[in-house]
Every structure is written in structure tokens, then in C-alpha cells.
Image 1 (cartoon, helix red, strand yellow):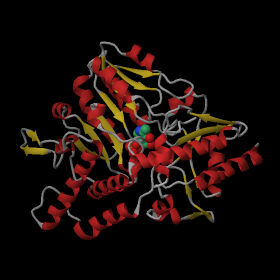
Image 2: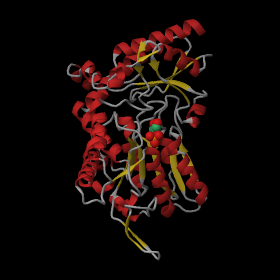
Image 3: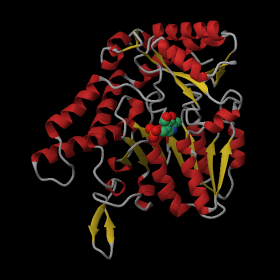
Image 4: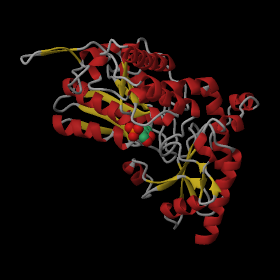
Length: 418
Ligand code: PLP
């Protein structure tokens, strides 16, 4: 059962979810004749009008390529793009804007680090540690690197509640450990991992750490200097921003030492056929024309979230999670997968003898959008002995009424299939 915290009670009175819902045009949609109940926020979040307008404004009023133009539009587009970088830098409290690299998302950010940092720092016989609850995005790039380098991938086990077993993590560390990459909050279980402890232990052993913050970024205030992580990755579309844009944060000393990821325009300082010198940070890692509108949209999304306040959002979602967890706990044949005390608003479950896809399809006819499947965490599904789960995930605009619609839908499913 998730913990009821005091901030949930304190903030409740000022959180106006009905007002917030009006900011999201898509929430007016009807699905199969029923009002949309969108509970698939861990897959992607909906976008507020504020973000949509900023993207439209870019295309309608200032569309131009950045960094290379002397004309007015190019300068304005560059200014907006670089302002977004500063918004993001401030949001995660990076030391400087040069530590903020625009990528296509979490997946690309992790691949960038595996390909460049891994290329120069991981050698035959070295070891990389990840965890059993990683998204495929934080497994496959390291597996590919290990194959290429003849290195070893080690995995922190997970207990029956879906929590990392910290004592086992400590045992995995060896003098050959060159890198640790772990998820802050699990997309399949909701578990919030003790990343500060992991980072501190890693650093005592001289090992750098990457934090996959894809699911944490819109629920947990993140201060990269306080966390002291070496790298942090997240995607714009999980925090009410556009798809196709994301962030890699890296400590400046690492980024400076790393070779470029892709070659092309913008990442160069000087090119001759004999040799190329590379641009300064962050541009060294931003080859080609970036998703300019995406970056501006992400900046707007962060401004929007900051206005409501991450603490308020987390408190609201925690309340929804507790209500939903309580309401489904005694449904016959329902097993919650992921019962850690410390969770974000993700509720995964399995109904005995009913395939998750049937659950998803049935709920869809009730207007309820949840996700069913392995959630890109196949090793984790295997660990819990299920092929897939049904997952409801809450966002800042969800309501207790929507939780009731979900729960009533599940009761109907149990009547029909049970
Ligand atoms: N890591 C986690 C924990 C995720 O939940 C996701 C997406 O669901 C990813 C990584 C990959 O994010 P993206 O597909 O935006 O690159």
C-alpha cells in the first residue's frame, strides 16, 4: 500500500483538478460514446493548450533554422530554443546549460552514453550493473556494448514487492565495475528506487551512474547536483511535452571527455577533408537540425508543470493511487504487481485467467485507456511469472471519479469473464 504523506493532506485544498482539466483539449474527447478516461500516462502524457500554442506559435510566426542565421527569424528561433535549454537546466538544477543535451528521448540519451562513454571507458572483462526492473531502453544499449567489448552485464535483483535488493547490489560491485545505470521510478511497477543511496555507494567505489528518469521527471522534483548523478535521461512526452524530444544531462567533465555520438552539421568547429574539430558543448552532441519546435514545447511543458508544482502533482497522484489500490485490493483473482511503499502513480495488476488484452479491450469500450502488455520490461514480467500486466497510470488531470469508472469496469470484467 502506498504511503499517505502529510503533503497530500496539506496540498489537497488548493489543487483544482477541474480547472487543470480545462487546459487539456483532448480530455473533451469521447471514445465509443463515453467520455475519455485517460489512464495511460506512463506511456505518454496529454499536452496542455499552453504547450500546443507554443509549438503552433513557433511554426506560424518564427519557423527558421537555428544557430546559423543572421536574419531575424533565425535569431528569434535560436533564442527560444536556447531559452528552453535554460528552463530545463533550472528545472533539474544542472550546474550549467552546457550540461543539457537535446536528444530524441530517454532511449537516445542512454544510447548516446553507452556508445560514447562506453566506447572509451569499458573494456574486455569489465562489468556494467543495471537492475531487473529496467525498461528495454536501459538494458539493450548496455547489452550491445557488453557484446562489442566482451564485457559483463550484471543485474540487481528485485524482491516480491518489486523493490531493488540493495544488499545484493553492494555484492555485485567489483573492481571491474565501470558503470551503473538504473531507473529512478519503474514504469511497470511504480517503484521509486533509492537512487541517492545507489549513487553514493557507486561513488565510494569510483563508479559513475546514469539515472533513467523517464518516469520520475513528472512526479519527483530532481536536483542533479544534490543527487550527484553523472548522467540523467528523460523524455519530453512523459512530462506533458511533445514526442521526439528528450534530454541527456551529463556532468561537464564526462561530456568533455566523451567523443561525439553522431557526425554532421552543428557539432563541428572546423571541417577539412583531412580532419574535423568539434564544436563546444552542448553542440558537440547535437548533430543536424534538432526538433526545434519540440525543444520549445518541452520548455513550455516544464513551465506549465512548475506553475502547478511537482509536489502538488505528486500529492494528487498519490491520493489517486491510494484510492485505486484500496478499491481493487479485494477484487477476487486480482494480483497487484508492484507493492512497494514508495511508488509513483502506476498501478499494475493481473487478473487470474483473464488475458490483459481482454481487460484492455473491455475497458476501452468503457472509454478507459489503460496499457496492457509487457511495458518494454520483459525480464521483469518473467520475474513475476506473468506474460503481461494491465497498467493504469495517473497524471495530474485524473480524478477520483475516473478511478471509480476504472474500478467499476474491472468489476464488470470479473462478472463477465470470472
Ligand atoms: N525508461 C523508462 C522507465 C520508460 O518508462 C520509458 C518509456 O516508457 C523509456 C525509458 C523510454 O522512453 P522513450 O521511448 O521516450 O525513449
